[in-house]
Image (cartoon, rainbow, N blue to C red; front, side):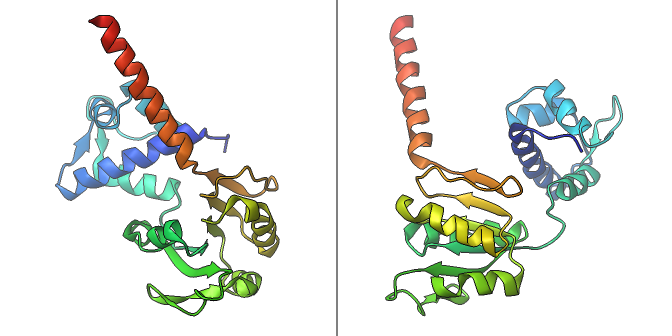
Length: 214
């Protein structure tokens, strides 16, 4: 398969969420116009995104909601369970570990790790916080492919090197740090400061445009 842009994958996730809602409400078909309106894009973009993966729907009839929902779940790899570990039992780690959406989408948190001896052994959801000393052995034993990183920046790269060496193939990084991974490892970084700065930029420029219009 040709390389698919991250922006396309994000739109596929949006299409899936709206299609699941339509399916729950019993709607049989949805047009590219409808999906575009719901997802804030264009009908041409919807058709282009879906065309990467095959031919769906019929001209003039729209997309069959239930069938396209199933196809998108398969395309996004949600037809199976994915084991996930969380490294860092701080506030961000706690919020992520208790996020119900993980399990609803097929992601099962099988371990939470921290290097603070005071936290190790404490209850954490359905399990307990584990020592970082057990990290590599647990990843190998459980066959975990995904790790969520919620630790301070100064320790992030060292932890990444450990988990990649133990077999982790995909990382969702919340640590405010630039980290590097081998080519075979997928890395997604969430920088909340940058996201807030983006919102600040939008508000600032929106205010400037309003003032200019006045």
